[in-house]
Image (cartoon, rainbow, N blue to C red; front, side, top):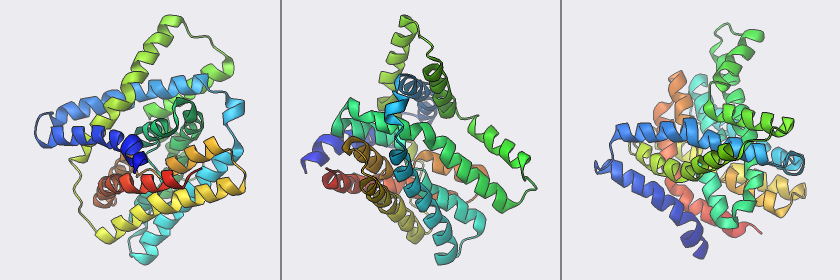
Length: 309
């Protein structure tokens, strides 16, 4: 119970403030759009840039960490894809979008603040290693499978070009790529630039959590409730269960195991709705899954926190 009060609830209190402010009309939807544009296009890319630029790549890019987390993520995608098709009888294109909901956990807006509150700033190094690969991996799989499924005539180099364009128009990926460039080339950043980036970083997560609450007001628990609950089951239980099991089997260090399991246990992120909307498939299911899974994760994350060493 103490973990719930000290670690999880403060994060969801900020989300709740955002939800309440927009629901009651104290903060406009246009304001939420502006806030989310600031956080997703500027503040969070700055956060990821500085984290990757300062990360000890040799120490924290542990293959066991990435194998554990992304095997679980891929298993979640396949469960969502084939479950939607074979259990719920959805069309293949809809099934891909539902699979993406089970693939893309909210590693930044929920994963970072919850891990930080649970284990401190030093515990975030493994989170940043996961996040550095997260968007390229998830978008690469989702877009490739969707384009192949839709059979638009994009094959070979044309398909690769489409996937790369979609990924590298994402500000988060650009921030990560710039961080890698600075890190690998050992480019020194001037003091004033570092200080300015740190100011942006401090604003990123609180503003993003408040904005996330405001965005969730727009999502209504509509669509097929059974398949939404199935997405919640895969995203909140199957993915972290596989990640933790593999991490333990591969003797992943305790700090990295905690970060990987908690990140895997996060609810689907807003990117899942963006993906569904981009292709016009399963938008109601994606929106409902984001809303319901985020609410349910208050308890599921508490359970995972209690199970970790």
